[in-house]
Each structure stands twice: as C-alpha cells, then as structure tokens.
Length: 57
Image 1: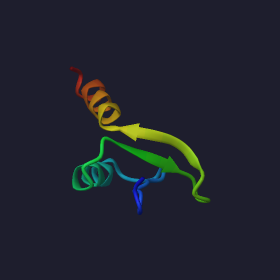
Image 2: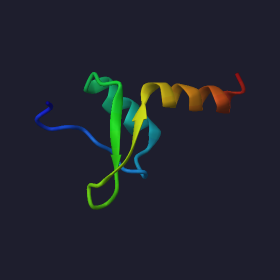
Image 3: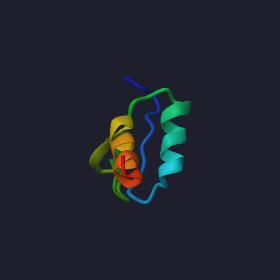
C-alpha cells in the first residue's frame, strides 16, 4: 500500500496529470471530488486514447 497516494480532481490540467504519472512512476491515478471521495480513475492509456482521438489519428 502507498503511504501517500497521489490523486487528482476533475479540474486537474492534463499536463499536470502527465507529470504526476511520470514523476510518481504510476500508470493510474484516482480522481476524487472536493470531499476526497473517489469518482473515477484515469490511466496513461486513457490519456493516450484522448490524444489520438483529438489529433485525428
């Protein structure tokens, strides 16, 4: 178990999220609301899919 897990909110900018993933050497990050309740998980694969869809590839 991770002592200080990393999490993001829906408002977290995608570049910040990418940095968190890379700097913490993780492949997924929980998304929490303002009360810290889990509302989802975002993965590196999710980000790659989003990038490929917006770039027209």
